[in-house]
Image (cartoon, rainbow, N blue to C red; front, side):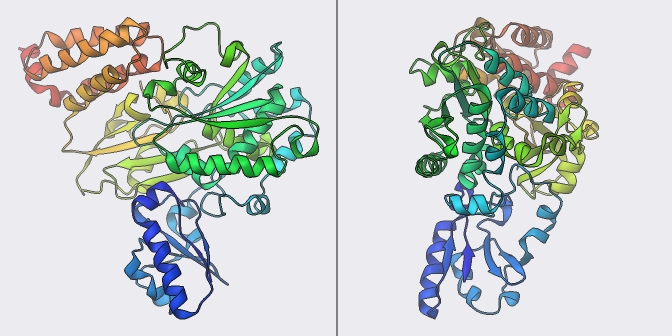
Length: 509
């Protein structure tokens, strides 16, 4: 038998390791030889640990599994109480357009042969036949934008680095995934690490960079372990090193671990940390693309951005660009979390409305109560009420409604949530995580907490003060931490005035 049990951190947290041990033990009792594969997660977190058994009809899914459910796997599979049917036919899977995550949950994460058998390295091999300008042009034509939050066109960043004159250039992968409700980077690194390595190699060859770094947050020990092992495997196989796949072109990379500062998700803070300095924001200009790591031209891209590059080179820019809407091209891995019935990762083309994502894909709240708000884009994202659920999921479309997509994390709240408390949390979060470099963020967030507390006590005069403070932070902060904190605060105040009732009532009188 060939059985798949995820080694994904979420699955392990829900008991996957115990299930794996139980499978090995039970197989021995039955005298059955089991090929146990610790794959990545398919993204259906509410079904984890999700066990799959390879059959002539395809991979059959069972979950959520416990050790007590294991013995029945060695009997009539169709009669198993946790049987779900063919994995790929499950509604959650069938509705997706999996490009970046096509192999996650399908392959053995640390089998390079398995990776290649599922299309891996095809993009790199094609890139090695192209010159630098053609590689950059392909990425530009695809319409790929930064998936870390800013949505900056990837091709423009690569072109800037490629055309810069320097004796050394770098590729830096921002894997400091710190937003609440986000886990796509972690899932990708744990479930398909070679696609990130391949994407970074293509980036290096396209821009003239010969060294790369993955800056990985310390809170992700599983991802650190898998990525470290994958880099070593890739190096031994000649995918990395002095001659990538025998091409004569050099690219190598290392895994570096951050110390857990949220602000190091901002690219210049990350670069300072990577250099061994305190993780604080740098003023721009100069841009990292011209003076980044060690003062050299540096591409800084998110995990999902770089992991998507192999798909673009394997299938072509036109294929990838065909998905999406407006200036939001390709697919986006939605991370659905919070008070939701069906939480997990769902990759789909840009364009679904927020309502479709929450009500149809997510299935509404886990509590069964009405959805009150959805925060999109992490702790710095705006709270959208149901009146905005017709908003299509796209960068410009959300921007037009004073929101942001960020890393595409969605946290759902039911009608028991107090939005004044959520506004206070946003300011408190900023105050705790601020690097202290600029005054609007360092002082503004502390004053913000105090001002929200005044509003909670019924001080109507504090409402215009909070608005003015948010405008100052938005316009004057050096980076997105202080600049985007006003999004959740002002959206809570604007869309949920009843939660600010005491002060609102006094202001009206």
